[in-house]
Amino acid sequence: MTIAINNLTLAYDGHTLLEDVSFEVQSDQKVCIDGPSGCGKSSLLRAMLGFVQPQQGEIVIDGTPVDDKTVWRLRHKIAYVTQEPDMGAQSVLERIRQPFGYKANAHLKWRPDAVDEWFERFNLPRKLLIKQTTDLSGGEKQRIAIIIALLLDRPVLLLDEPTSALDKQSKQILKDVLTDLQKTIVFISHEDVLLDIADASLALTPEGGRDA
Amino acid sequence: MPETPIQIGGLVAGYGLLIIPLAILLWTKTPLLGKLLIGGIRMTVQLLLVGFYLQVVFDRNLPWLNGLWVLVMIGVADISIIRGAGLRIRKLALPLFAALLIGISVPLLYFLGVILHLPNLLEARFVIPIGGMILGNCLRANIIGTRWFYHSIRRGEKAFCQQLADGATLSEATRPHLQHTLQEALAPTLATMATIGVVSLPGMMTGVILGGSDPRVAVMYQIAIMIAIFTGTSITILLGILFSRNVVFDAYGLLDRALFK
Image (cartoon, rainbow over all chains, first blue to last red):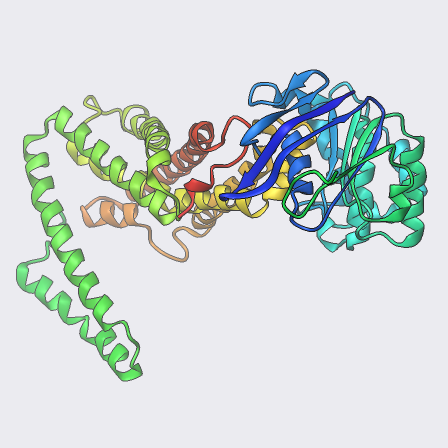
């Protein structure tokens, strides 16, 4: 699934975050977005999901421009892991099951064995499932958010600094998992461990432009 | 008419009772004196004006005038709920008014028509006090509910967006908030239902007893009004959120920040 960013300008509260950026992500490509804090990296991912609207330009996913009509359908093709995930207040199992109750995911079969497999892969104990999400550490939240995104099995994966709270071992596990995935993956990261798997990168300048 | 009406002299004596809280505030130097004074004056002026107006409404007993008065009460409650919830009036006024109108009318007309078997549903001495009682209790619950719903989504905006990203429709993403809102808003009414008559003698029952009726009649009125209040509260909260949801979320499913003061 392809993503095209065409002359995109993003602003928030009158402050320009991203200015006239163009970029293309090919199907099944792994692309790293890098740049200093506040240059609009997270906003760019959020714009792909319609959480930030462009001032100018457009984002086209799988040939369809993201707008108020198409965004609801396009979201079904994207799995998103935010930086420092907020999981509300519920048990971990309830949080993992939550998207499986949505009509958009009715085609997905709820497989507890798949949850167990991913927990094992990411070194998470099974007893964590009955824990409250509010009691999780940053690293646990991040791994669970990644597991949910993987369980949704969507063609596009957007990851916003997915290793920021992970230890060295978990970072390596994530790298191995992402390497094996045949999906279009766009991730924000400053970590060498993930930069290694990128087929291409988009470097943004402090002013929100694209670094040549 | 109560069997022992309060005379003017008696009412003046009633104000005399205020000397006690006044003395407590002065002795403890609690800075509430001004508020007590303003509150007392406002209460007196408002109730006198309403009393005079209601006397006219009751004397004439015109169905359209009685219905109009109920609409005015709903309008005032509408604004009070939005203000009390710390939200802006512009977007919420109309959907909340519609929710209150339906939510109050259903239990009120049921109470008057099915329970009391009144031939004239807009009879002033029934429709106004009973409508006011249902509305007054709904008002408190709706302030709690409306505030809880929108502020909890705003506080958890990141989690809310994650739900949308996970594939939730607006209805699916707001459902957990709606469940919590109903829990929070209905809890005080449920607590009142559980303790009523034991902890306090409720207003409706007091009124019926003061009116000279048998306590058993008063109890039946009270049971019926509590059920009507709970029904009205549930309907108004649910409809208030469903109706307003269409105007306070944009086409991308994001909550309009201009909603908050």
